[in-house]
Length: 339
Ligand SMILES: NC(=O)c1ccc[n+]([C@@H]2O[C@H](COP(=O)([O-])OP(=O)(O)OC[C@H]3O[C@@H](n4cnc5c(N)ncnc54)[C@H](OP(=O)(O)O)[C@@H]3O)[C@@H](O)[C@H]2O)c1
Ligand SMILES: *[C@@H]1O[C@H](CO)[C@@H](O)[C@H](O)[C@H]1NC(C)=O
Ligand SMILES: *[C@@H]1O[C@H](CO)[C@@H](O)[C@H](O)[C@H]1NC(C)=O
Ligand SMILES: *[C@@H]1O[C@H](CO)[C@@H](O)[C@H](O)[C@H]1NC(C)=O
Ligand SMILES: *[C@@H]1O[C@H](CO)[C@@H](O)[C@H](O)[C@H]1NC(C)=O
Image (cartoon, rainbow, N blue to C red; front, side):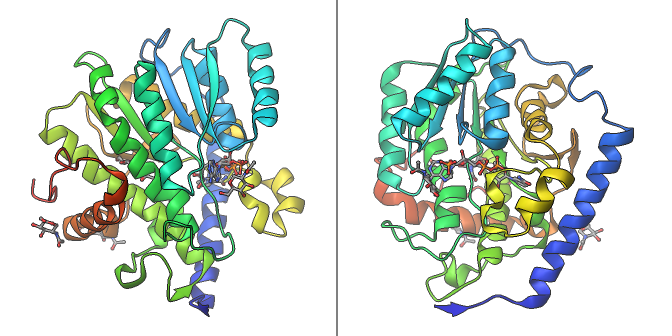
């Protein structure tokens, strides 16, 4: 495999992340000390949320907060059933009256995503909040059995498919008074990225940093496209994406120095989870979708991500590649770029 790593790109990544890390510390110390308290949320009791990767890190904390708000939570995870049971016990001991379940999903494998979605649709459960959280970062090169590069598969394509397959139930669950929401956990690193359409899945050359950033950029672009599509079709569903912060979690398993510095210097998962919960439930965000949120503020995403020509190209490419797992693509419009 040819390396496409470029030292200046990697330096830019670290400098940019360090800047974000610094600003986050200042913000948390002086401006956001109280976290979520003081925020106004939609009424949650009895509503249902689905979160991927909710057994560790930011996802686990997000699931915990949603349960504390009285929501029912389904977690999609690739843990073994014994490990899932342990995680469930932990959550149920914290919130004994809660309704929480863990269902198996392997986001590297599109047929697993499809099975998961079919199980969900069969269950008859509503779906008010979908949080596309699971992710991997800087993993070694791997092409999945479906032909996707692993970052693109786990962070982007699987969540696109999951969202598409669950859209019927999401649409039904929202109403004009209280819209359903889809949240993508993206990253500030999307600012540094551009999409390489000629080698989207790194079949020719590979750099883990490039692939991670590209997958996060795709999430932002897809958020903008899908939100527009849902708005045009008058659906009571909003789509937002977030940057959770620089948080110490398992995500850093491939970054050798993070296990020394991360626990001291990075923020705790709860901080990132609060941003996800804010995006999922805040009344402030009920009017308009398609927002990119950092630290409870909607920030303009990168100019690249807002380019409607590129969004349309990615949208077309995405559905072309996901076609084998979609029964009917009728409800996906061929082009959403024209507003
Ligand atoms: N931490 C940060 O500084 C930071 C910054 C910006 C954005 N983010 C984003 O935040 C999100 C959450 O990350 P995190 O920091 O909480 O990391 P994390 O603790 O590693 O959580 C990621 C979750 O995704 C799951 N996952 C990975 N591959 C999977 C697969 N093939 N099938 C099903 N589940 C899979 C993991 O399960 P296993 O444990 O079983 O692998 C884990 O539960 C990610 O999308 C990440 O890109 C994080
Ligand atoms: C879940 O998937 C990730 C890669 O996406 C992998 O590293 C991890 O080992 C898997 N977990 C289990 C329990 O199979
Ligand atoms: C992100 O959001 C769009 C909706 O905007 C959704 O279709 C997609 O699956 C989500 N996930 C990713 C990883 O982009
Ligand atoms: C993004 O576009 C806006 C308006 O088109 C422009 O003012 C701004 O400088 C651009 N930002 C970057 C980083 O290019
Ligand atoms: C995406 O596909 C539609 C219809 O198939 C087409 O009209 C549009 O031009 C395509 N977008 C791009 C950027 O190629």
